[in-house]
Every structure is written in C-alpha cells, then in structure tokens.
Amino acid sequence: MTGPRALIAELTHRCPLRCAYCSNPLRLERNELGTASWTRVFGEAAALGAVHAHLTGGEPLARADLAALVRGAREAQLYVNLITSGIGLSERRMEELVAAGLDHIQLSFQDVDEGAADEIAGARVHARKLAAAEIVRRYPVAFTVNIVVHRRNLDRLDRMIRLAEELGASRLEAAHVQYYGWALENRPALMPTRAQVERSLALLAREQERRKGRMRIDYVVPDYYARYPKACAGGWGRSIMVIDPAGRALPCHAAGVIPGLEFDNVEQRPLEWIWEKSPAFRRFRGEDWMREPCRSCDRRAIDFGGCRCQAFLLTGCAENADPVCSLSPAHSLVQAIVEATNSGEPALGWVYRSQP
Amino acid sequence: MSPQAIPRLAPGCRLSEDPRRPGLLLIPEGELRLLGPGPEILRRVDGRRTLAAIVEDLRAAYPQADPARMERETAAFLERLWERGLLRVE
Image (cartoon, rainbow over all chains, first blue to last red):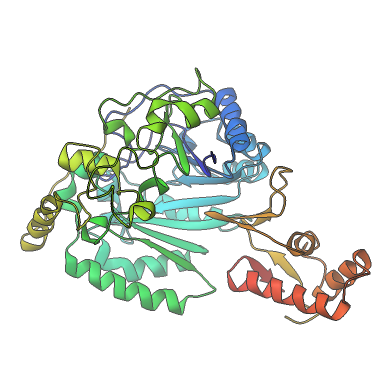
C-alpha cells in the first residue's frame, strides 16, 4: 500500500480571526499535542512516504513552539509549508521560521478592501496582513497569497490578482468556499451566483495567460456548479492524512461529521497502523463501499464518488454518490440550492466561528 | 540560456536530501521525480556557477559522455525548469 503524500497538521484551533467560512469543525478542539509528539509524527509520516507537511490551524503562529515544529518537520525530510493569516508574524519570528527550514508560506487575505475583509474575518486584521506580506517577501521562501472567494467578494477577483502581484507573491490561490462546518451554516450568504462564477472563469483564463512565467494562479472552482464532483482529498485514505490539534488522525479535515467513525490518536497508535489498518481510514478506501450509480460508473477511479462528507451532509448517508454529481439520484437537492441562490438576494448576516 | 547565465533554483524549490527519495525535486504544492542526469545537473546549480561552468564540471565527472550532447541536454533541462517558474537566471 502506498502511504500518504502529504501530512496536514492542524497544530491548533485557536485563531484571532473568526471567518464565516472557516473550515475547522463546528466543535473546536481545545487540547493540543506537544512539540515532541508532533516531531515524532513528522518522522513517522516521512517514513510512511509523505513528502509534504502543511502546518495549519486555526492559526499556527498561536503556537509559541512553531519554529521548533518547522525544524522537526524539516529534519524529518519533509517539505514545510505554513498556512497562516499572518497575525502574529513579526520580523523576528519570520527569521526564526526561515532559519528552522521553512520552505513555503501561504498567507491568507479575505478581500482587497479593508472594510469588507475585516467584516468577513470578524476582526480588524487586513492592515496587519499587508504588513506581514512586506516581511514575507524579503525572505527566500516560496510565497503564495490565498484568498477564499464567495458571493460578497468574487466580483473583485481582478483586484485580488493585482494585490497578490503587488505583494510579491509567486502564486495566488483563489479558492471558492466549500460548504462544510461554518461555511455550510453560512451558505445562504456565501454561495455565488452562476453569472458571477462564469465571469470569474473568463477573467481567470485571460489573467493566467497574461501572467504566465511570472505568477501562477490556481483557482479552486465551486463544486455546486460543477457537473461532476471533486476527487475529495484525492480519494479517501489515498493521499492525505489530517492530524487534528489533539492528535486524532482523519482522512480529511471534515471527516468528523460522518457518524460512526472513530478516529485513532497518534498518541496511542503508530501512524503506519492508523493509515493501513484503522477502521476510519479503511471505511471508504477503494470501491467496495460504493453504491450505484458510483459502483458501475466510468468515473469512479477519477473522482471516487466525490466527497463522503458532502454526501452525508446533504443526503444523510455517506455511502451515497456526492449529490453535486449530475448522475446522483439526489442531485435535485443541489439543483434546488443553486436555484434559490440564483433567484434571490443573498442572506445578509452570518455566524462567525467561535473560539475553542 | 547563454553559457554565461547563472541559474539558481527559485525560492521554495530544492532537491530532497532524503536518501529514501533520491532525485526528488521538492516544489510548492508538489514534487518532480527527476530522471537521468537531472539530479547531477541540479547538484551543480548553486547560484554561483555559470551554465558553462556547470557543463564543464559535468564533463569532468562523466568523461565518457558525448560533450556536445551533454551541453545541449543540460541547457534544455534548465530551460524547462525556468519555464515552470522553478529556476531563476541571472
């Protein structure tokens, strides 16, 4: 069996931001693994075949031992990527992180306009992020600007591309909100219209061509408007492993919503056992769990039936085809959501994520 | 790429030092498995040596290889990395 290609380390759920689309679970985790446990997990992941460590949160900078964790991952021979809001990034901390072996930093922005950015983040952070970018650009690491896009900001995609360029990023990742956790609660306010999505795709094709060789633009499209589902997490138990702050190992960051799954903890079990033998990782691996139309579908080895969490959240059963798929018998559920989104005004308010 | 060009890997790109994964070029959000002379070429790309010096060094290390072909293939390999944004050239 091949091991995971990437380890996604949710170092903490603490975060100074309260984004309405936060991908952390609704029930946030308060316990956190210590430095030594994380360092051991990085070594086990590399031995299992992982090449990349994505250090994420919450806000990883909330951990005072972040530089030691970067060093631990790097010494385990992993490529170290830090996914951060930039809040808490000083010149001194950046120096420490780079000296510890940081390879890549992904700095999030919420929008191009301070008012709109701070409103969706639920905190006054935009100006501090701009200051963080000025620090990051002076260091020899790969620099990606991340922006989550949705109904409120998608029409400013052209200015987002210019912002990333002005900040000196070598890559922009503009990712549509995916509707899990907090984002699912707030879908009526966040889901874009079809016209918005189509305009953004046309703009993107032009901008990607113009910036070839200077700045790469990756765009994660909204799956409610797609014909076929995304190959979620590259297939269940196939290419990634998420470790939550308390040390539970998950096949994807949202997997906790599926009832009946128990997640083994890296404090109790070796990573190799969890990957190969734990019931949670085996639950939807391969094709044995599939029902029709997935079981006999030509695309089953391409998208693996889509996302198990989305199938559960929208149809109540995780074994069903992801209902965003046009072949799903439950696709009318998604069509109804699309219809409602395109025929009325968005909801005005949203709930902010809370603190662990 | 001219013989006097000085190539270096872009920030965030490096050859893996993991003996379990020889010839793996690590890049943001991915990796490239280098075949043939790729790893030997990149080990000499240090931001100081010119393309000419890199080829010269490869010739000394592999005296049995066809020198003209080695020069062509080294330049072509580095140009492919440059086109993907993985290499900077001074």
